[in-house]
Length: 136
Image 1 (cartoon, rainbow, N blue to C red):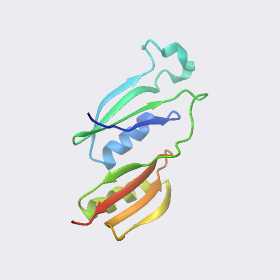
Image 2 (cartoon, rainbow, N blue to C red):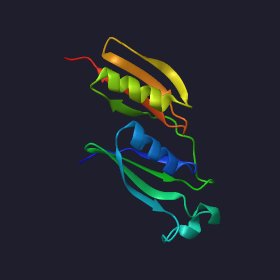
Image 3 (cartoon, one colour):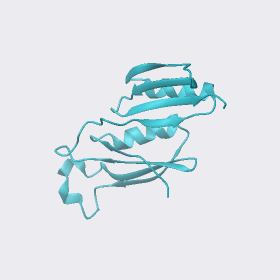
């Protein structure tokens, strides 16, 4: 079994996944538009090029996402995507990249459990926690 987060976007899925691909050193493996799909008539006509389903591989992990029709979209709340990162320099780089244009809720810093821990909401409205644990 594998647990993979799926993120819903308000028309910005392709832009977000390309941004995450760059920030997280991942690889987009699927970007399926509504146009030409069996559900194309369930979204506004202007949404044909929006993303029905996408997949981003990051090592052995996978992040999926989609553009949700405007009348069904809800702002993300009640969760965070957590990245456990081994190298403090990588944690710093990724935190600052994700924070660009977003909102930092807890500055990346040392805590009693981590060399670096921080919380932010990126420019796409997705909440993230960056954790670089201490050796046990």
